[in-house]
Image (tube, rainbow, N blue to C red; front, side, top):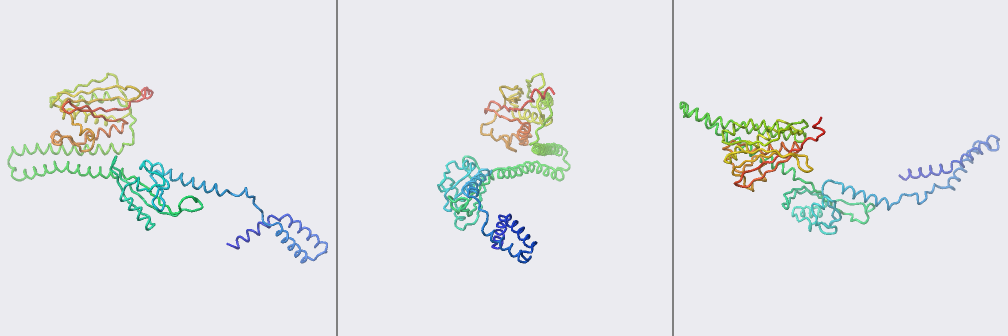
Length: 430
């Protein structure tokens, strides 16, 4: 390293005195040509005068104002560090070695609004697991990882990385050199998906196990004691057909739900007349309505109403809503299907399916669109329901950019309102 610096300084001197050395070389060449000096003497004289000139001129002096401003560099590095922390998508908190807050980004401020710089982090984050991880990291000066959760105001889970490190005194001289970074990663979506998956597997296996056990039991009975009993055989075969139909409906709903979720991010763009689809569904369910002693009243406009959608999925949506009214509101004697055109600035129409049956208790309304959730399990199974109908409705509406509202008073029937965005007038003309 020292030899490199010496060579660099010598090269700087040579460059600074190159013009003087060139003139000296010409003079001594002339002396050698006129035989005033011998060639060896001329070369020796040239070298002597060149070295003396270079030493006299010295290296190039850089003006002080041309040097980079160290203060600006420190401020710039500090600002860059702050910008990096602020731009991170996760909450980040910076602590000193004693556990006091040095800084944090806006996501951390949203996580703990009471957090203040200079205060111990334990005042704003009262989580025993995190406190213990910080204490261990301060004691051993080694990184730690911990999972924490909070229940108020909503259930949330976080993975926290506690990482100690030493800062450079030249970059941030006003900060402590021993710092600890807390980085939070939100695990809530993953936990909820895991819970939904576990619930789905448990519910699906339970729903399939019941009819499957019934089928196996009747088959064993027909192969054994009821082998030659014609009356029992006919009765058992009818029950088996009903249970097999229930399993087929459940599998069909599961496959439909899976297909819709797979394409949930792809919004359909085919123009569909929802009035035509509604009329077709009402006509196809007239037989079921007569069997249950219910009248379907459809109050719909004569002109078409166009939306961007998938006709098969929309018909499935309307079938589920109207079938629910026929099954669970049969005591009311009628199901009313109405259409409400857009009102105000929202370019969306509303299709309401109302029954006049017993209604739904208020505590069940927020969970009706969950998979396999039933307000009355026994009644639902007796009616042949799979517990997936309203989940299908919600997912179909989500894919079409719509939403579902449920209004009910216990003992006064229920209204299911599907709101869907309409096509703009320009697209209708096309």
